[in-house]
Image 1: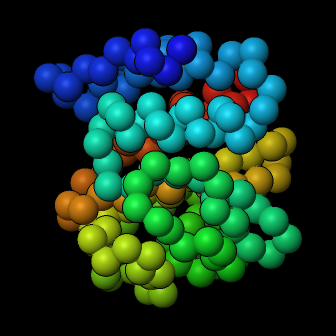
Image 2 (image 1 turned 60 degrees about the vertical axis):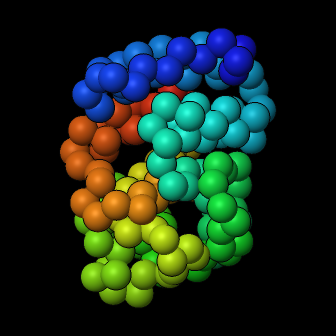
Length: 158
């Protein structure tokens, strides 16, 4: 249950992920509804890390459409190849952006966002969406985030 989420604040980032991942797995195991699982993942990540914005965009035709998220209101639709989310989708890879103002074509859904990490979600070989995480701090995300966030989104396939 979400209200039983144990939050670990006084530890390094890797330890926080290692504490959180089994809890996320327990939250989504046995639940078939993708939207429910994405919502719980976004909420758990926001609660643990306190990021400015965390959520999902889902592929609908040639656009990413806003899915479950935690944080201020967001862009509703993003075209393939546009902004960090659209680029991650088009390139089929994780993008870590230390300063969003320096990213060509960045879409400023919220002016307070300063850095971002976006990971594609797959069903088989097909990208079906992206996990988007924004911080109000520059250079907030690194390879540790990429490794553990990928582990979290891989839980959706298991």
